[in-house]
Image 1 (cartoon, rainbow, N blue to C red):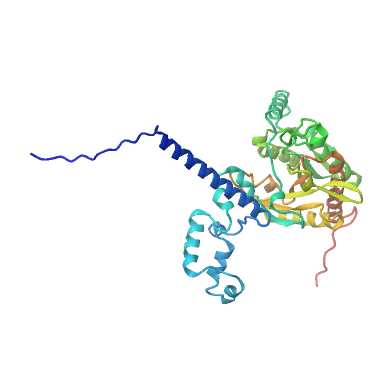
Image 2: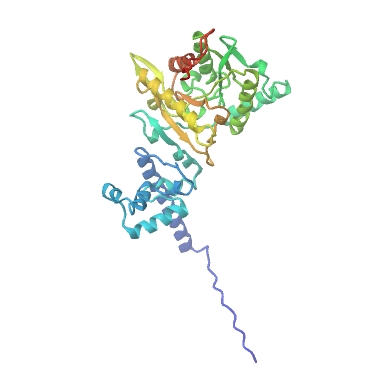
Length: 390
């Protein structure tokens, strides 16, 4: 008779006290590891940035590893930079390429698993001396109450036939020739002192919000004889950029001479990062954000760099810096900046600033931008000078 062998099975009682204790210990140890890694990441973030420039393949390779690879052909690099041994180089390269992890940067262990760590993909292109990674611009959504009010306002506008944007309802100021378009993708962003709140999560308002800063910029440009159009249309947070894009397109269709498109926001950083004092007066500070997913990325970056440097030439440190954001699961990375090579997203102040501080700031922005526009605009009756042909 043929004998059959069957695999034996072992049952484990998961309800036992010892098993439960070991499971709890395992969970606590995991939590502690994440806390330590996160704390270390935040500390290191104060002095470094996470760079994702270059080819998609090599973007996950650390600078030190790349230098080590090049050192084989350029011996000087190995003498100038401390590099790992050949054995450790192979393992590091494999780890960084396959898992997008830089063992020198603990943020990369968590950045792909925790959505909030998308913040650390922000790159500091230019910055004032006091700016570190923990003071980069932060974007926070409005609370549920405000989102509900926004939804109702949009529904009312749709019922009245105001959406999509009617170009005739956009507010113009200054000369008939309009050069600047001002809008606010996150229009409800407000300031705690202006709405009588101390809760940083409630810095949103349907009326007292960032649109008032846009109106101030429009008024200052008009004083310089520069025409502009402003929009204070409400958008839901989750689809803000898709909807504000339609606003920009409507404005471009209405005014063919529009050249500059400014999306004005309010940062969520606290007062110590967003305020500067000059001659006894406090000013809200700027932060320029450039989307790396924009097809006009290079031109928009150049414009932001120009504004940052010119503003700081007049008021040192008033502009915190120029920050680049790639497209990730947590960031838009484009910000409608593909629509024009003269697009910008500018953060004016933070949740603790006052309107007067933001007004002083945008007066400076109006001066710098206005002078750029005036210098580039030929006077009436003249034509741009050209070199004579030899």
